[in-house]
Each structure stands twice: as structure tokens, then as C-alpha cells.
Image (tube, rainbow over all chains, first blue to last red):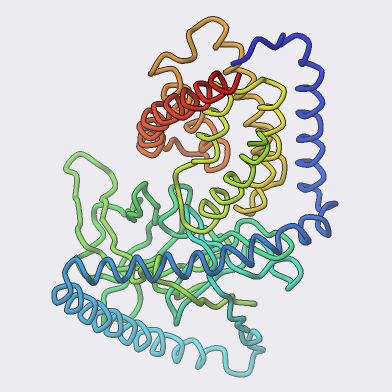
Length: 265
Length: 143
């Protein structure tokens, strides 16, 4: 640090702090949307190819590391995912059928609409290329096929940030379904952990959950219902605990996503 | 070299951070810059770097600037008490700054990432000392 007197430049420091607070408050209340939208544009324009290159390099590197093995694993993962999806579709269809029989004659909710969005970045959150200008709102859900991808937590003029289930702040109310069976086995809370892990908590000890069971959104707290998130990898039943825990493996590799669908309910 | 050309490097790093990079290299660069450059200039660099980072990451505008300014101010205070060229000064400062920064944005303590950034800071500090030393020698020769 130079010999500048800190006291002399303290007013200058305060001025910059004041401007920063001013920017923050104006942005928070949405009074800077036009300005930020204008300045976000070049960033989006440059970030998109950077992220594509990163994804390509990442994939190539993984393939080079162990081509045969990774190829086989990838194929099996796709197969497993498809099976899990099919099973969930079947059970959901059965349940829907039952509900529809009951609901016959009453008004049904209007069909969801989907908007395709491009993924332009992934750090701790997923960044998509649609924002307030395209009527994206906080709380909207994103899916890929019928797999839950995340929920919009922040909206800017031309981009939005999506909280993934693996985010340490993510808490998703879920139900646990056994593949092929109707109804659900138990309720729980899916929590994201540091390092991209998923942990199922708040499942009572007496509930029967097993490896391979599907984790599906329950539809509470603003999450859309019946979207698959992952499969139980390992169940940990603590002897003295009220609740049991399970490690969940997501059905999606979030780093390989290029396009996802925004659900407009 | 004009001192504010550092903002080009900041812009590039902000783009990387916006796209895929998790380590807060912009913060590291600002803090490393703060050790070697005049305080007033560093305040300006911190302010604009914060704005660039917020725009690139899509975070609330001005929040990173505010954090950077406060961190640089604290660094300037501590560099009067301690020797800022001591090898562990920058890494320790980077570690705690990164930890607090990430907590403010993510409400989660990212210990591991902050530790890695501190290790990067240790290497970057030697590189900067080497580069600044070379520039100083060149200037002395010219004089």
C-alpha cells in the first residue's frame, strides 16, 4: 500500500460506498432495469460462447480420461434414467387416471406451457438467457423432460438465476415412490449439500425406503408436483435418530445441460 | 502501462466467473492490486470491478462493489499495522474476504473454495512481487 493518507481519501471512499448502496437499492427496487439490461447484453453475448467452450472441453476431457468406461456408464445412465422415467410415468398415469375418474365433471386446471431457454452459465446457480423482459418470474420451475432442474431465484432484465436441487440452500418437499408401485412410500425433505450432493432428510424411521426409490416433488411450497429429481443411492438408518437419511443421486448431470424448459403454470 | 488497464483483466475474469468459474479471482486480483498500488486508485478499481462482476454474474448491482470497497479499506488499515508484503498477509486476507463474500451471496460458508483461493493468492503474490520488482528495476534503469 502506498503512503497516501487514509484520512484524506476517506470522503472519496464514502462517496463510492454511497454510490454502491444507491446502485444496490435502485436495482433491488427495479428502478435500474433499463440500464442493467443494456449493460447485461455484452456480458451475455460473450459468456454464451465461453460456457459452450467450457462444456465441450469438459466433455472431451472426461471422454479422454476413460473413453470406454465413461461411454458405458453414460449409456447405462441414460438407460437407467429412461427406465426411471417410464416407471414414474406409468405410476403417475395410474394415479391420474384415478383422480380423473373422481374429477370428472369438474373444471380441470389449464395445461402448463413450456418455454425453451438456453443455459449460459453454471457456477453455484444455473444461469439462463431469459429474464424480466420475457416475463420470467421468481419461483418459476424449470424441467428437462419431466425431470426437475431448478427454481428461478433471481430475475434480471435479460437473464435469470436458477437454484439447483444441489444448492446448499435448496430445501425441496418431496415424496418417495417405489418404481412400479402406485402411491408414495414416504414424505421427506431433499436438501442440497456442498459438492453437488443430495441428501434426503425428515423421513421417519418406520417408513420403508430403499435403494433405487424415486424422489419426486410433492408439489408443496411452490414446487410443481410429480417431477422426478433423483434416485436413492444409499439409506442410512441411525439407531438413535427419529429420522432416517438417504443419499440421493440426481438423474441429471447439470453441467451438461444446454437447453431446459421453463414451466409457465 | 495505465493502471486502469487492470479492468480489462477484471472484465475477462468476471466473464469466466459468470460462465463457469467458481473461484473469486476478481476479488483476489483487487486485493493483490491493493497491496502494490495507491489507495485511491485501488478504491476506484474495487468499485468498477464489483460492478463488472455483478453484471457478469447477474447479481444485485452494487453489492460486490460495496463488499470490495469495505475489504480494500480494511486491507489498507491492516497494511499500516502489519507488513503487507509478508507472504501470508494476502492469502489470509483473501481467505476471510472470500468466505464473507460467498456467505453474503449464498448464505453458506464455502471453506474449501476460500482455502483454494488463498492458496492461489499465495502463488499470485510471489508472481506479483516478481513482476513489480522487474518493473521497478526497469524504471530505475530508465531514471
